[in-house]
Length: 84
Image (cartoon, rainbow, N blue to C red; front, side):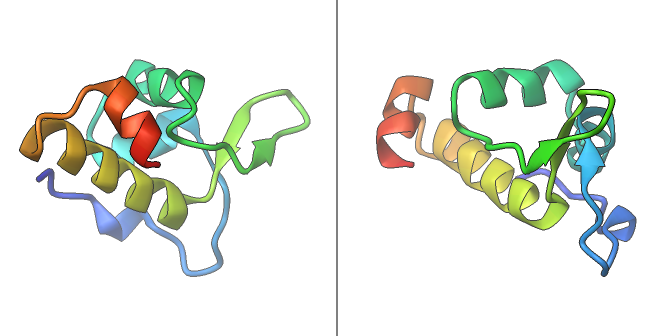
């Protein structure tokens, strides 16, 4: 399991953009985009500029679950979709 940079989480539940979320979870932004497109990671909304926004706590919990199912249980993305 990846070590999450929890120091970047804010207690006021500020929504974050893809790049910020990717940095928190130590993955590429394309990974976040992929999980969002596949319906595994729901966005919390959009900014005025059209950027996808995520609740960091919910997103990081979802990313941990996805990673656990994908790497520890060796499930495919389609199998994970069925479970979530």
